[in-house]
Length: 114
Length: 114
Image 1 (tube, helix red, strand yellow):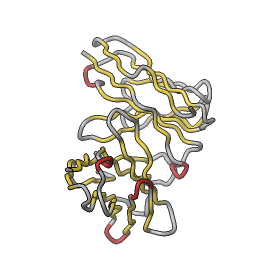
Image 2 (cartoon, helix red, strand yellow):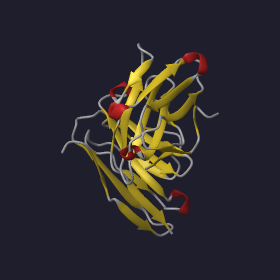
Image 3 (tube, one colour):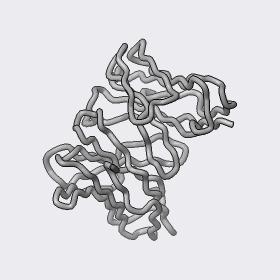
């Protein structure tokens, strides 16, 4: 069973438009949730994470994500896309909150159109 | 600069050859792990280690060996390379087990098995 699902393997937005990248998880208990970004030929960088507390999490580069338990979602948003946002984005979950059950989604490639 | 260093960056192997992918970190991180990244499949955990002398299997361990003789190094060995092992390999480390500390990723090793 897929632990984390990213809807849309490719997303294109115009520069200045809203960015919305979708992530849903399957877990009986609220997991820890993460978004990572990967620029071409580089490793992954942590954008933001949710563990406990406030469900709206702000990350680097103007990105934020909201944990919605009722929807089992953790969608990533940015109000205004910039050309430098073009990259691959991965949602990840830690189902056991221990690091032993840490799974990545299949990734969403974001293209920003000038 | 502190971080996770992976070598080599690129490698071509013939089927049946063996090789070792190197991973070193200088952040005194206890937790280290190896992932492989394949198109449409995200990142999958191969092996991980919670400290020197301790290793365990991840999601896709077959065909790979690891050891952790020091805190700094976590090499990944391919015993007899197969075309199915063509992939991009990432090493990641964390201060402790448990992803609340956040992973630091290396820049990857692109392996082709012919």
